[in-house]
Image (cartoon, rainbow, N blue to C red; front, top):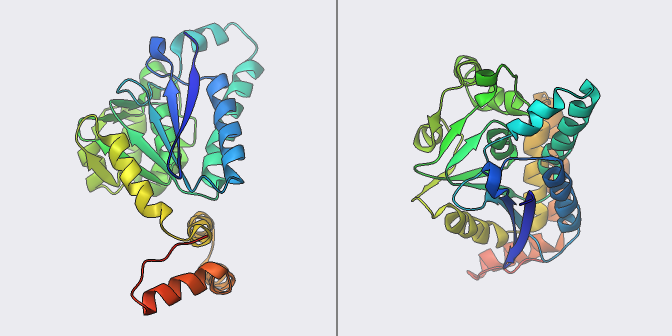
Amino acid sequence: MTAQLLSTSEGLTLVLTLSNPEFRNALGPEIYAAGVEALSVAESSADVRSVIITGANGIFCAGGNLQRLQSNRQLPPEHQAQSIEGLHNWIEAIRTFPKPVIAAVEGPAAGAGFSLALACDMIVAARNSVFVMAYSSIALSPDGGGSWSLSRALPRQLATELLMCGERIGAERLQQLGVVNRLADAGQALRQALELCEQINARAPNALTSIKELLSDADTSNLNAQLARERDHFVKNLHHANAGIGISAFLNKQKPSYN
């Protein structure tokens, strides 16, 4: 069975499902390319206001396909570098996608699967799901932005422990640390992620885009630069039609319906 990225719609939410049953939803070049393409199409679609990335059959993602990696050792290094660039293109597409992206995690999120979840804007995880940066266990270092994400989400000492020791960490512990947003009962992560998306989809898309951009810029901005960006986004959004809808609805104690 080939690795696929399945695409379905639930209202205004696009659900992308990792499906690679033989290898526990391991990632590969075909999935990376499909992920970039799906987000490219969704970016300009008014029928998509949010995206969920999840895994089939109660498994989020086992990371890389070790058999493929072993085979790649017999090929020139450029071959593996090109494959990783495909993954990184997808990670960058998620980070720069102007709409919210939610990871719905069941079971293991290992290696690049953990990195993929971290690239999303929020994580909904089943209570019994397990996250692990397994790279050092097979003499490898991280990819998919895992080191970047963990170094910003956690104290340096804890990020170092997760990456160097390759030990498993549960969803409940990650929620305590502020990495996982919401916990779900086993088998309910996608349903709870859809409920979160329903809440998000009811808000003005332009405002959500600004929030995502501002949070991304904050990683590298000093205060003065970030204040200037906040000013520009605020003024732009105030003069957007959705601000008129939102303010009027609030003043009249009505529920807004945004464009």
